[in-house]
Amino acid sequence: MTRRIRIMHVVDNLGKGGLENGLANLIENLDPGRYEHVVCAVRRLGPNADRVQAAGARVMCLEKPAGLEFQAGILKRAIREANPDVVHSRNWSAIEAVLAGRWARCRGVIHGEHGLEADTSAKEPWRRSGFRRLAFELAHRVLSVSDQLRDFHAKRTGFPARRITVIHNGVDSERYRPDEAVRTRVRAEFGIREGQFCIGCVGNLTPAKDYLTALKGIDAFDASGCDWRLIVIGEGSERSRLEEFVDNHPRWRERVTFLGLSHRVPELLAAVDAYLLSSVIEGISNSLLEAMASGLPVVATAVGGNPEVVIDGESGLLVPAGNFNSLGKSLRKLQQDPQLRSMLGLQARRRVRKEFSIDSMVRQYQEVYEGLTATVPLRTAVAV
Image (cartoon, rainbow, N blue to C red; front, side, top):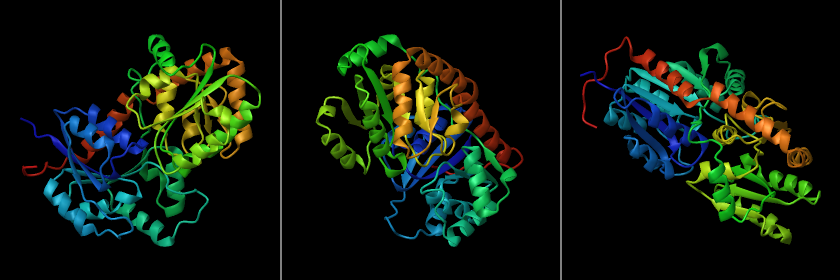
């Protein structure tokens, strides 16, 4: 029997972010007869730990304390224990796995960049950019989820952009799709009236998502006097601040719902009329892809990989980051024009199915994994 390729995925945590959801999507869709997975969380676990375990992955957590400088030796011991064929680290918080993987003499070492932790205009400490360049040089393959992110890191580090492979995130367009029966049921459950314009947001409530600007945009939109609802799905450090903003608008208390984390995202997206993404920093947003696959017209900020996903005026509307007036005007435009909503939603779903399918994403990762192991014998069997 052919031995399976064992991949050790190293991430900061297994929370509900786009990176973590994308990892779970990949593990769920790679052929279990060909691949086995070990997921190593550097800091902590989270809701996606159960999901990847259900898909057959082994999960381990190193529980690195906040603020503590990590040592590659700790990761090397974890890698030696897991005995993978390929180590695949993601983002800055897991980048030391590149050094550890080479130190442990792994046959394949991959590093992927999935997003940014700070404003792209902020100057990065030279030690960080230098270390990132070193890790890129040591990795057998360097990946990015968007052209913008590839070019950004190439410019910051001096590492050639041609040596960074772009693999866009993919979405399951069967799980995320329009469904009139679900729409009717969920709108009734949440008391969304017939004809009421319902806006949906999905994402971690963090400064990078800039939900305060989203609320200010809705405030400008509200001035038109239309009937609307807002459903926010997600949790994070900004929640109390956002709830305070809503509390300062007494009329909003019956209109804005903070749901926190939810496993019902596909049916909730089927129930809303438009999707709003107000991020100031973005790689390729999984939630944006999911909304588009659900046939929703989207209003998104023109940052990161968003312009690679949304063709402005054709498969959605793009607005400048931090500009609540533009955001409000775009929402008003969608609310006033049902035909425009229908056209943008239809084109959004077509675009996602053609350019950002989960099958395409999985196939490209598979090609990377197979390419690294094709000419090198797989590991000696060691019990995991």
